[in-house]
Image (cartoon, rainbow, N blue to C red; front, side, top):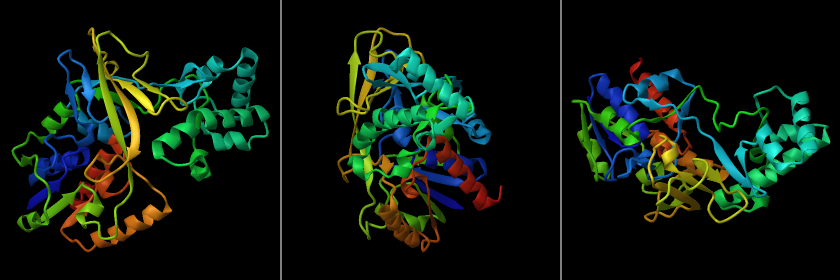
Length: 368
């Protein structure tokens, strides 16, 4: 069976390797001049692992996913923490006891922490919606404070919406962490590939059953040469935007190099209430690179414009989901083609869920 996979991002590469390991002949193509999609990275002359499309931290609780990728990389055991500039202080997010103690007078902080411990289990994330439902006025105050300082202005910048247009059910899921764990993720497995994501992907594609073609845009004429096709590109693009474009948010990065050991005190610092950018990433933290220079990226959200920038985040709402369902109905009429990935499924995936989707798809197709 001859199989074509369109898109050499993490979804396409994972599926490709799974096919190759099971004696299938695979061709994988990508219009870009590199593999890895938005997970592509490279090393500077000073040994800093720079993520070209913004900071990527791998984390998962799924052993199958971790074990699959671990065949192709050694992991640097990096535990991700994020800080945010709130009222002039750099504090951990999600908001936790350490954030509270840094931002509030001692007596207030003590009351907030005691109220949280009285109502909720230790070391759990509690949505601010739950805090607002509490009869405790301190927890109600804390919920409103976190909403305002952590979520509201950041989301307005990130998604380009007005505050009054934000869905209260979505905003209500913003968490407060009941404890002192400063990590952004509590996943069992976390890390950065020791030699970078791109090297991991190169190893995944290093198989005699795999042919890689870069700078090769997809055309429908290709389908006649293959028995099956797996499409990880934009589903609306595949159908020539028959019903119009599916909306996305994009990002613009301003990369800067500084001739000093560090720029900031943390790998990622969010700026919810200040500046036009949402966050600054500093890449040498990921592999604890020791050198006299540093590379950072300022991250500016912007609208996706076809031919101008990259698709990053599907804008999932009722109207856009209805549009996606129309394209999904067309997809069901394509017996040789299966859609997957962030763009094919019109769904935001973390890296681990993208890999899991690819592995599950192969197992479903071939009963393994």
